[in-house]
Image (cartoon, rainbow, N blue to C red; front, side, top):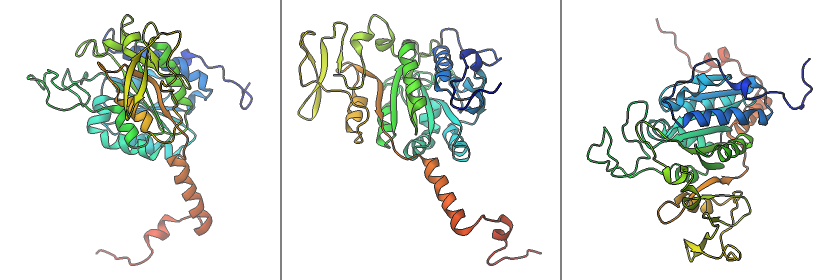
Length: 341
């Protein structure tokens, strides 16, 4: 019997697991990302057939094969463009883009920027392992300066790109970061992204055990992460550390780390608000990095604004109402025409 409209669907993680063998290197962080996304999708209460996963090229781009949903494995860097076209034509679908630091920020950087600035209702997961894994270990746009790889044997002289600062610079409406070893946190971020209306952009620190192992060990290692990372909690002060005795406050126009007695935290600590229209605060968070600051994890920005497909389809509706339904043959034969003999 069909389920009643608006009734909770009885889908589980098993419904989202495809019949394909998952083929990533043993120990790859992609496994945890896949499992956690399959865990949270049933919570969004959308029919299985309404999901589409679109990927480009790279290890992460095998993702559509492993989801029992519709999907496209497209070409290098072009997943955001193809996903934009799909969402514009089928706004009822939940469209997820799976990309990596190479696919999304190098050859696909331009497509990513414009999807973000247009606020297309896409969920973009960027797997950042600071290396080209599929092509066997060349440096990527997020590799740290001086990184020695097969394509930079003396150390790269490229300054690394900051994925979240880039997104905030083009006014992305939802920007977040998580790490593959913290599955609970990752699930919370994925669910928040899935519920956001507009472009939801999530950077995932993802470990490549073969070509760049322990790239993010400061925030992924259980013994280190409490002192090296900062969990962003809405409406709560920016406090971190195993003893919860460190925080972030402003000193003039600069942020600084302060230590205090956990029983009496300072009243001037920064308080996290992701819903600020002005992205200045979120940008400040995106610039925090080790060794001076902890690495922020969570939702940096989440604001509401009209989506690209809403505005586009409104224009089409208004044009049809004003001028009537178009006829392609009439259009092609209107005005000056030539017959080529």
